[in-house]
Length: 183
Image 1 (tube, one colour):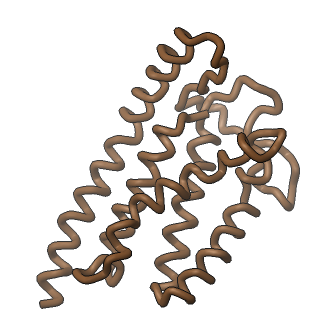
Image 2: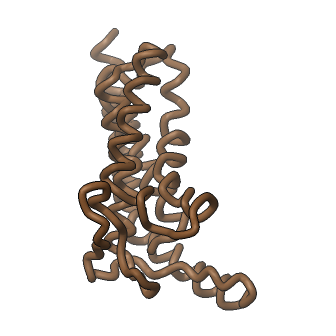
Image 3: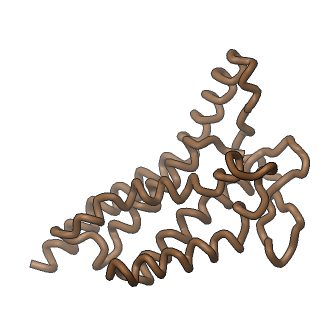
């Protein structure tokens, strides 16, 4: 399963793409500048189960969790008078990126995979592609944690980084086109 580094990069990339959407990131919209940070937090959110639950990759790594995030985001967007569809899409993609990355990652611990279809199924799913390395959580083995997790994070940056760079470019250039068209 990917490290927090990979999830943060995917979340920030989601935020940058969101900023490129029409009507989201115009001059004078203070909230728009925090979008990449919010998306990074949302992309990390499924791993809250490491702190709160006795098991990992269960309900917080599922379709049910994505729907819950969408409902909460819609309520907040209505209350704050933000674009509801864009806000919900942003949140769903940010949280969903976590599920996709974990699904594509190597998972050596049982049960293997993520409980992607909960509450409809309690079955675990994994792609078998092993695109991302597992993260070592053996904190008592400092050398392994540093070397292995640094290698895993470097691989995530190499694989997800180009998508993030494209998202940054899109935000920067589409935003300039939209701003000049609005003037």
